[in-house]
Length: 464
Image 1 (cartoon, rainbow, N blue to C red):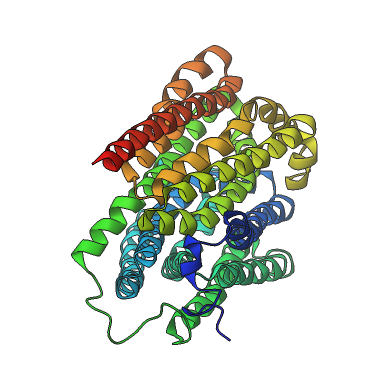
Image 2: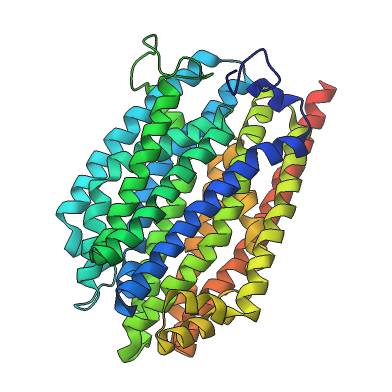
């Protein structure tokens, strides 16, 4: 039997009446597993690179983070917007429009990957130097990114359609596609890095190979007529102005979030170079370790929000706002628990993490010291991320964009300009912790204001 059928208990239409707790488990657990797997292979890749190539390679990899964020930005602009709209159309029982969204997402993924990947490949060295690469780190960063950029069409199609797969009622298959990518990557990485001595280039080849396997799996799903939503010859234009406009409007929030992350990492890298003296490259390597660590727990929270997204989108589209609010409250509690666990680990035993990535004692010491400042307010991040993604899932992109900007740009950039002048490298770590605190406060206040206005409008409509 198909994993999903309109007339069965596994129909996406059950998003409007089944227990929210049960739905969250069904949708979030596969997404969390996929997110954890993705984070783990990023971490393990870094471990392979750090131990197989050296500490400077870790710094070179950290230099690529802004560019990787840009790659993700242009992909999530399409993927998240398309997934959200798909869920809303399903809530409105409009299967044809959901299918149209699938077609548009596929086309946009190809266009974005060719334009962005091609331009970036041509000007790669100039971009990496702007991002903070030095003569020592540029060769590693270039070697890694050349392979990744050649694989952008594959990765965009995989990520874009995988989000649609989850949003249209196939969380388990979406998890499997992510696991296929991870397992392939982890199987090939040590062979390419150590056995074949390809170094950091081997890590990049393994990454693209894993995404290729997953891409084939996702395409097979949407080419099958057994899938609830699939490619058909009855699809309308490959690009519909109205759908593209809505995709971009909703996807603009995660897009800006990743662009902001790119800008922030540039500021961070340059601050570490300026205030780290002769140890600037090593300080960037320490940030690379902390970045991988924080993203591990954030990706778990993202797994929760990905599981929430179909439930929120469907019930918002159906006008069932009580289920929307209940889903949000459960998501916030789970998000805070996850980041609190991360805080406990990084504050009490940072050495356990940093020593995984490298055997260089100086790099370990830099990472451990930075972690104790970097993660001070980390438990609050889980709440902020869930609230931000909540507004995105219910089709309120402007609010979501505002919240994403508060944490990653509006507050962090000024802190990065001011605090390092007072405290040096410690000021860089303190800047990130301070922005986490202020962004959390803004998220809570924004949610309270939104809920009050919504209750007021609902009260007026009930009296009409």
